[in-house]
Length: 639
Image 1 (cartoon, rainbow, N blue to C red):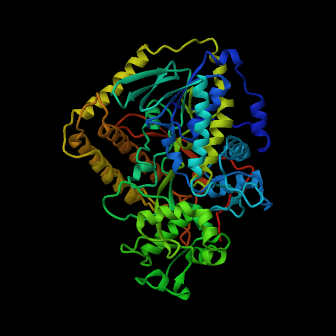
Image 2: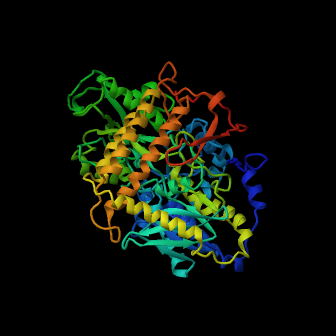
Image 3: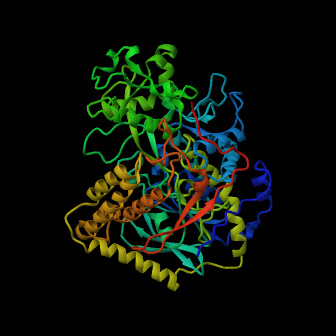
């Protein structure tokens, strides 16, 4: 029986974190050298945490399945990173950023965690600037900002359309500094298969060396998961192909609660599916909606070239429906609006599953050079993929799976329900509610890694200064290693005829059709049935060529797909029990007369955290009530 204790401190929200931090215990410099910390994942959250902990003097072991941290999916973030600097003098503040995130998440997040993320955002920008991240600057040399969806201020710092890449290079440089100093040891090409629990505490992990196939044991005094989200549950998504749920899922199986798994974001501006052979989709940054106008023809089935459709025959539907925010409404709102127009027969392109994103007005007003300076690499990417020059005619876009607000449940210390197991960045659930605002992902990842976790984990580790090195030859490590090897061998023994990718593709379509942008009870139940049938077929007919004792990418894929079946079932279970619409979770049965999400605050103003009960057993739901003291709980409106 679990007990959820969020450990939210008392006091005014603007003082909670500073007061709490002042009371946290410390570990002195000499004792830090005796303590080991494992960090799994080396994207923005993992690299920032590993470098910050190494800088403090801890002995850090950092793991990634890529050959280099530079290949983490954080590199794909395009549009920017938020901070409440108020450089534009547009009345921005930490409280306004906090309020925008709470409202954007449809009031399904903890106030204290969200305010803290907003509070440390300014530190993140200062730190990245000191690291040399080349943020855009105005003519006078000051850092430039632009607006993003769901807000009415300009607080997003950016580096053209490659902000994630530049920030990742910054964290990579700080990580490399600690590697050179010897405080951080890198373990690339390792796939985490299990968490090791000793006397109720996370004391290590089991990994598979992807080059040799060896099952390895690694011990530490604490484990930090910074393993990103599970958006590839849809197969076609904006995420990198390697993104997966398996590390977090292994923690879930060992007792860590998984919170709000059905809260998964659909991004409104992806390049549409071009053919049946695609294995991923490409994001077009939300920042493009600053200057691009979204429209469809006013007449159904109008197949004229977009430049031949006159202005009075165009429906700028976001500007029409949401005049206060226009094209910069939040992602969930923009995605559903695009789907509604396409489903109603107004979509464009051969399939009718896309809408236009048009820059002609901006180019005429500002000049092509100004648009190229802001979005040049994005326009080049679009033309390379589609063969269409967006300077001459509109882009075509359509919603796609993108980000997971759900994740491992954590308390105010970012610790899961397993003592000593922390989760940061996208791998936890804490900051974004039912819908993440654009440019808040990088903000949370780096805030968690650089400025929050180093304080809270030290408080936990203060009890371990006399523990000594954690041995990796105990029965708990032996059992976990044996279990991990057994799963690999079971997959290899099937000797079927179908590839892991073919199963993933079919599974992704089930999830998109039944637990995607719009959901209903019958569809969710049908989705579970189809998942169960496909999972049975998977374990009877999966084909994995080669050996488990060698570099084997098909085995890597199969391990991830095996976990995805369980992830998908839990997503459907969570979406089914939440009889309301909120943010990206849209139940057809619960909508307003104008088709907007209709919350049920009386019954569902809580975090739904699920406990694993066994492979064939129904998980147990725990509810963490959400308290609203510093924002008014009311219906979202962007009109």
